[in-house]
Amino acid sequence: MAVAQTWNTTELVTNDKAHHLHPVSNLRALRDDGPLVMVRGEDVFLWDSDGKRYIDAFAGLWNVNVGHGRAELAEAAADQIREVAFVPSFFGLTSPPTIELATRLAALFPDPLNHFQFTSGGAESNETALKIARYYWWLKGRSEKVTILSRKMGYHGIAMGALAATGIPTYHEGFGPMVPGFVHLTPPFHYRFGDGMSEDEFVASLVRELEETIAREGAENIAAMIGEPVQGSGGVVVPPQSYWAAIAPVLKEHDILLIFDEVICGFGRTGTMFGMEQYGVTPDIVSFAKGITSGYIPLGGVGVSDEIWDTLSTPDRMFMHGFTYSGHPVACAVAMPNIDIIERERLPENAGRAGAYLLGALHDRLDDHPHVGNVRGKGLMLFVELVVDKATKEKFDPALNTGGKMTKATRARGIIVRPVNDGIAISPPLTIQPPELDEIASAIADSIDEVIGA
Ligand SMILES: Cc1ncc(COP(=O)(O)O)c(C=O)c1O
Image (cartoon, rainbow, N blue to C red):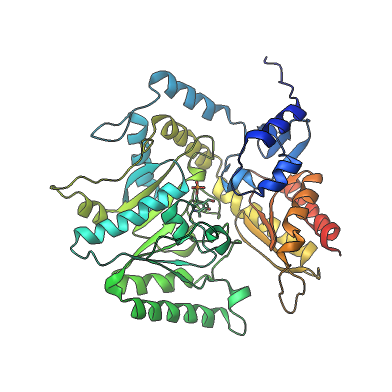
């Protein structure tokens, strides 16, 4: 048996501080404090380089759906690397795992989503989806249909096109000019945008806003609307149940394609295999990543309808889009047993059950807290929103660094979540069970008391 490796935390931290430019982080704070170095994972647990155990209550970055340490995924990768590590999907080549995965996805997604192109992650998937939407209309002789509708608080990744669709201003600051042609709508977030309205009235107001936007921009200029079935990184916005079923027909009526960004929702997180199943709406294009390999290896992709596929397969043109690693054999070979695990262990069902349990536990502990404005979630995507005052819903001044303080407080209690200044996002592996869910709820409640008072 292999002897567990021991780590020199001081050396690791020193070298990280000197040489590693972290993504989406306060670089000054990291250069001062250094990172937390994780060295091992098993199921819902992680261990740091000092041997301390944590519950990974964020599943990596919403993506380690099957939990850590699955040997069969390691074996699938090793077997494929031994067989052939890389074959491109450009100029008429491919490999068996890529074909097998595309075929499997065609069976898994509802009709007419039957045709797949692969990428290495979520942003690339959304770049692909947006470009396909424009190209589709261009091939149809409607080259003026280029505008993309998305929502405020939406997160679609931070490559340039995906970033323009993303509706969170802090991601845009300093990186302008943004790619033109993107219009952001009001998110279906009743707590913040639906004051004084019933849920039905709120949905009606969002439909009205969509219709007015289409009238203003001109349907003849709009290619697509992109949206996460449940918005994740923007703060877990769970739409009213009737929202998507009200939005989709308006888009259809105006020849505007619907793109669902299933990068977080897909592969079980909301309680069904795909987020779209929660709302009974099938898009024209779907993008996915994260859970398709549970983060064991980078992989994403898009699925398109039969109609789009037929239009794209024009005899006189090449489809001039794709990436070196589109359809990477090793990534596709890992996706297959990962999907097997999700199905075999009925992880979407557990996500629904565990999510309801955790939501209940958080409501029990936090509903009466003076600084908790809202507790919400769908499946294992949850959010505790922090406010200065429950009645006014005033947010904390970012200068107070509530997110940074909550990060320290939750980690001290042995849980990894994603605190931001407005609250705490929670998204554990889909295997999680009540004892760890109770631990998460307690650690969050105690951390809030410590950081901002009871
Ligand atoms: C809904 C959604 N879309 C796209 C992305 C971007 O994915 P990536 O970071 O793999 O580019 C993310 C990442 O969190 C996401 O949550």
